[in-house]
Image (tube, rainbow, N blue to C red; front, side, top):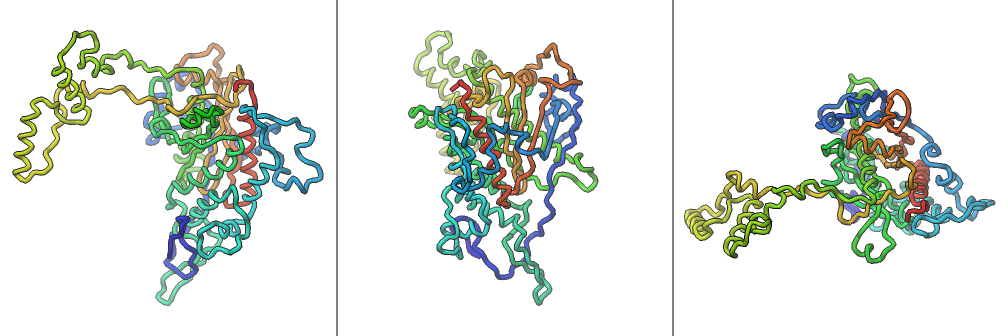
Length: 506
């Protein structure tokens, strides 16, 4: 068995020990009952602390979620932005262009919007069979030459999809028994789906989305883990499963582009490695992992909405005026405590650095060096670090919290009409080897409520209104199926057309 330049194992048809058998595909099937009350919503922070260990129906009820699944793309994306099914056909072969009779649209970057021809050039590469595309990848042993198809835009996607086949593709599974009675196997798989490294799924889905967003001059951005895991509920930041990556718009200003600044986010990608969602004793829709999967998706959507809502705002830093946040200035004599001589300042600097590194303040440096030399002569080459002792050292080591805003991001609610009062959040959710498009409409008052707890006068949980989270999702599109790939691309392209439309905000 050889490893190719692509990272996948070289095709080998000789019998080998059988890998773990692949079980049936499982998907979460949610059953949501919206019964939100003022008491539940007021204590969201406390309710969701430790949610991964203690999952309860009250957590879903508190968010007041309504859910509609298996919806056609037309129910998720306005038809004015969703490419018609005819776009999956060669425009040169159509009797009439599907763009005929439509005004030329422009994006919010004041550039013409990609149309049918650009869409088809990319989609046609996704409509080929898997084997044809795998054989067309450069550097793969045993590939046919000349390549059956030309991969211009989707090569990266198929390189990563090939890695996923080694865990999920059962189409060529063949089990036999050798003379010793041992089960042998020939086929593509080297393991089962639940054993696949999570990175394979993340890279495959990211590459699929990337080929759809490039024509719109957008890019993928992986937020810092500390920013990507904290959802603000009340006064607390609740750790959530991190978003895999977000789609952001490239700036039109060349100087900002060289600095790596992005604008957005537009929408997010959320991959999960869960393959089993309920135990044998759980009824369908009542499994712990089913509830967790829903909470993961809603949490990711709320985090994207909070980041988009930062447009035109500045980060609040309540610790700026705290005495412990200015410890260094205090000890360097910069807080009005009088001038200190250079020796005192130098000693203060040494104390601060020592406290931050977790060792005793460096008073009596020469004596410490002498003691270290004695330790080395005794055969102890690594002197023990002394722990911080006493309130003085702990005080010196106290530093302000890390910023929750990314330096290279200009937060913009791109695609949201001014004064709309709500934001349509889209999420590409992925499990197994499938993706689903999730749409959640979040009212501005809902975002304010989950953070401040400020009650609106018209709050009535028994009726529909701003306090509802309407979650809509498409079917699960199989990335191994060419037809599903084409439909999924239609959906993502429609999201980009909707988000990048000119709303007059720039």
